[in-house]
Image 1 (tube, rainbow, N blue to C red):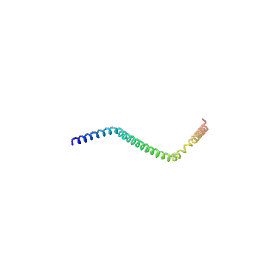
Image 2: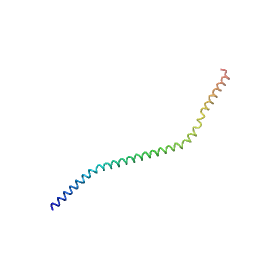
Image 3: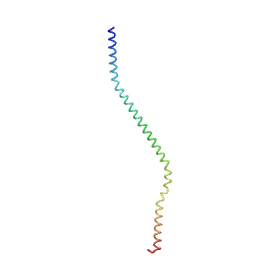
Image 4: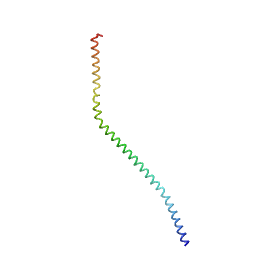
Length: 105
């Protein structure tokens, strides 16, 4: 009975030693899997953030596009500024000429 017990204990120790060797061999795999998982999670988070920012930019671009006709309507009169300046200069010259004719100086 002592011999069977010793064999069982020896077999267990051998099995434990074998499992330790195998576990040590797989430790690198587990570390690699964990790092790979972390990298994938980080990439997914970054892509999600980029997609959210792209959606915000698209919303802002749509708002700006919708506002363009209003801005165009409000600034159409600015095209006439040159004509208004020419008219003002003509009026000023006429007023100076009229004052000169009336006062003689």
